[in-house]
Image (cartoon, rainbow, N blue to C red; front, side, top):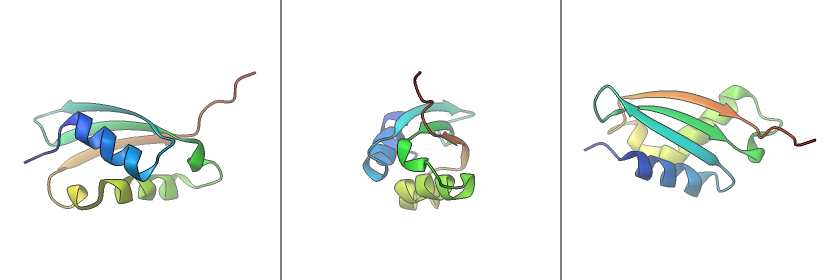
Length: 79
């Protein structure tokens, strides 16, 4: 059984506590579009940022989540 959007958000926030997470489910219940903004991504490559999200999702990436469209970024600095 696939996790809900809320469960995906919670898993990512547990693994990346400073994350602002948005999740959309599409094409069934096992395809997710995820946007993660976190200050802890600063200085890390896009690959490393994605690896952090994959680690937070753990076994769900191997079993229940069939497709993940992932966008990561750091927060924009306020002026």
